[in-house]
Amino acid sequence: MKNKLLFTLFILPFLSNAQDIHFSQFNETPVLLNPAMSCTAFDTRIIANYKNQWASVTSPFETYGISIEKALNHLKLKKAFTGMSLGIYKDKAGDAGLGSLSINLGFNAIVKTGEFSKLSGGIGAGINYRTIDATKLQWESQYDGSAYDPTISSGEKPLQKSFLTGDLVAGFVYHYARSERYISAQDGTKFDIGISASHYNTPKFSYALSDDQQFTKLIFHTNFDIGIESAGVAVVPSLLYMRQGPSQELVIGSYFKYIIQDQSIYTGIKKPCAISIGLFYRAADAVIPSLLFQYDKYAFAVSYDLNTSELTGASKAKGGLEFSLKFNMSPGYGKSLGKSLNRATSH
Image (tube, rainbow, N blue to C red; front, side, top):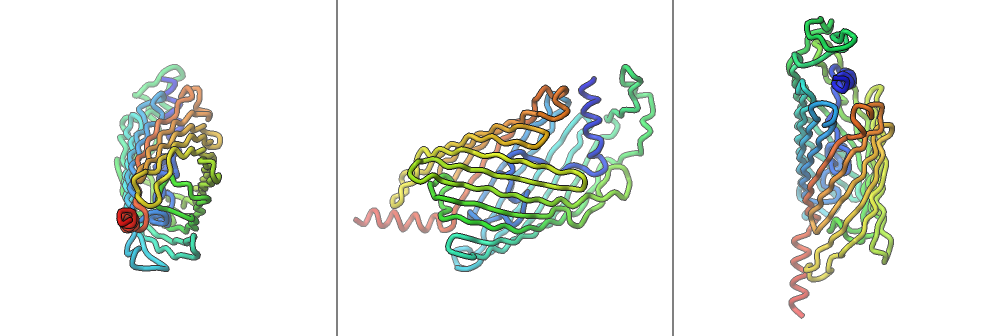
């Protein structure tokens, strides 16, 4: 019962200005962070995400997501091209079934600013659908000092069961990479630096039948892939900072990547393969050990949140188990590989 009370007190602030869908593996949710991230590194990218959180406190948060990116006319245009993305994310949490469904369609334009660099600007529009079973909520005022008594009036305003809002997002990204064909190739330095603004239309966002509006969320994100020449290893640091109204979040950390096998340049028979071990820290909230395995165009990541916040007593330091599965197809992959195979077989 104590755990349930602590969780109820924790979740109350989000009932009027609900929390956005949230993943610790933020590098595996690129278009959720910024619509300009679409197609900067890959012509086609599909990512599936799953997270289970707060299982030791109450009914767990379960979050699902899938994003699809597709470049348009990339092979036909030399200097600039466009991309589109679709992101669908759903979660459900707690005994009251606090749920959300977010669907967002993004569009971005990518301009090549140099031999290895690109600048991307993107916009997105979508919907957020929120649900709750308010009859299952327990309020602090319904505790008589020793136990929960449902016959005591909560004194709270009635909550609507669901509501639907529109959403707008926009952002910019600078992308640099010497080679983008393989996700585990030994290619020197690659990095992204981006900024974005979500909910900049400040939609009405409340279960409490009020005129409360959702704060605009500002995001700064960056990630690097720094290869150590001839060593077969790379350092892959990244940082995420988000601010939404009075709330803010900082996540920082790094993967350390070992390249098991690089790709064969001409035949394509040897597929690139790498494994990465990472540690990330979400300020005042969690330590996040992570493991990432990459093979050719595929990647699988698993991480676990070890809670370090004030809820540690209730959560017993348990946070959330998270998985992601990714498929990438690089610019001109099939065409370039076919030419390489033809050259190899003609000698």
